[in-house]
Amino acid sequence: MKAFQYVTAQSVDSARDWLGPRASYLAGGNDLLARMKEYLADPDLLVNVKSIPGLADIEPGDGHWTLGAQVTIARIEQDPQIRKLFPALHEAAAEVGSLQIRNVATLGGNLAQHSRCWYYRHRDVVCLKKKGPTCFARLGENKFHSLFTGNPCISTVVSNLSIALAALGAVVLVQQGKQTVRWSIADLYAKAWDNPIAHHSLAHGDLILKVEIPVEPGRSAYGQISEKGAFDWALVSCAAAAVFDDGRVKQARIVLGAVAPVPYQVEAANDLLKGKKIDEPLAARAADRLLAGAEPLEHNGYKIPMARALIQRTLLKLMG
Ligand SMILES: Cc1cc2nc3c(=O)[nH]c(=O)nc-3n(C[C@H](O)[C@H](O)[C@H](O)COP(=O)(O)OP(=O)(O)OC[C@H]3O[C@@H](n4cnc5c(N)ncnc54)[C@H](O)[C@@H]3O)c2cc1C
Ligand code: SF4
Image 1 (cartoon, rainbow, N blue to C red):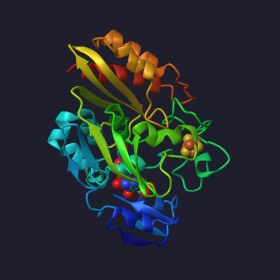
Image 2 (cartoon, rainbow, N blue to C red):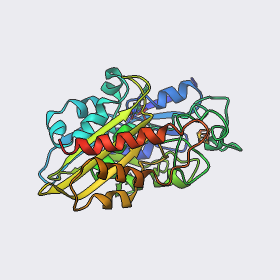
Image 3 (cartoon, rainbow, N blue to C red):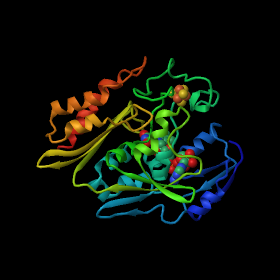
């Protein structure tokens, strides 16, 4: 690892003031320090953002809950009210890595982490995402890669929390220059759909402050399938949230993870559920709509039946 300097920011303004072109924000360090050890990142200065007052708070509310970017994933997993009100978020948090990782990893770091593509993570491979000439996964080892993408890079979004938060209709507060902007989860990842170099829509210096989750009188669920039973990344994940009126869906969001560079949604699948009771045939039709545009590669076609089963399972979980 290259030598670097380290400062602790005491306010949002000071964090931004410290963040020159060769500096990086440091939260739990799970992703950033690993990239530095592998020489994938070589900042001259780390700006610790964990001590900024107010950013590690969980604020309950009747209309929405606000989670600071520095709240750890373990706290999200263990909060009994979050488990009751936002089961999808609880379940997504509980599936992140190991308890040791969840104890230090933060909400903001989870949303802003970089691709896990094994070519990207190899320091000697300069692929398209590192401004190299080509994507090596397209014709190479692509079993963990995307079924859907809007650009030549086929790495997938890896944040579990982003999938659940997208289903819950969360809003992300991002400090951009002197203003605070409010982004949907779709906004937070939109650039990764179009741009092979982007992991998300954050520009250098943008700081995630908080995430607001609306309290809706409905139910939510999350599930994932991994190669190992625990401490493993998702091969496919799915989150769903719905508000019901007399047993029929009033509004719904279904989101897939690990199949695209963004939390993947299809409005026609959400619309299909409206006004209906969720049962197995309807869940199967919703899965068909979500997966209609899939473009499997040589080694990742197995994700399609896996995703179909997971969508159905997650939707049926909403019925209790
Ligand atoms: C072995 C292992 C297994 C894992 N498994 C999973 C898994 O199954 N699912 C999953 O979702 N994650 C998984 N993770 C990822 C883990 O959850 C993330 O590494 C972690 O959430 C990153 O959070 P952090 O606080 O450590 O971020 P850091 O490593 O400190 O930061 C990550 C990136 O985000 C930036 N950043 C941090 N905070 C902010 C902010 N507030 N605003 C803007 N940018 C910011 C940093 O500059 C850096 O680029 C795993 C990690 C490991 C090491
Ligand atoms: S999928 Fe993306 S990150 Fe992986 S090799 Fe291709 S361009 Fe690089």
